Length: 187
Image (cartoon, one colour):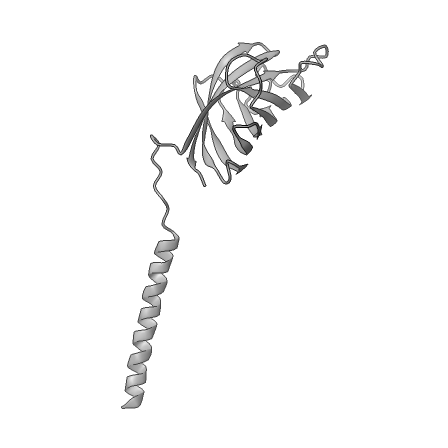
């Protein structure tokens, strides 16, 4: 009779263990829902890029380090490194609240398209830390979304979307992009 009780007890404990395991896995895999209409932080900035052309050392914020000739009319293969100011308004000479440091390269032979990877480095009285942004910039589209993939400081582990809108384009010399940044995962 005692072995029957032990078997029954073992089955009950084993069933309880499996049930507990099932519920713990469910709890651990639960994700919070994200409301696209309610970001936890929202900013709008302007990114300024002045490409080095051989004569503008003092003002240049970027330089092409690879620019292979003969690969079409869409700058395919061109690789640019930048360290440009981020301002609250359209004026390049406004006090920067951050720096955009990173690179982009043209990765499409049939149209203008670039892939960006950069960090916004904040060091102001308003914000301290970084935001990391990367993704495809389909330049011929009116708006383009890039991913915010992380951050530090005030933006620790942030995730969200950076929407690009070309605000001004002056050929290969200068462009200005409005960045509308919405963070949906803030800690």
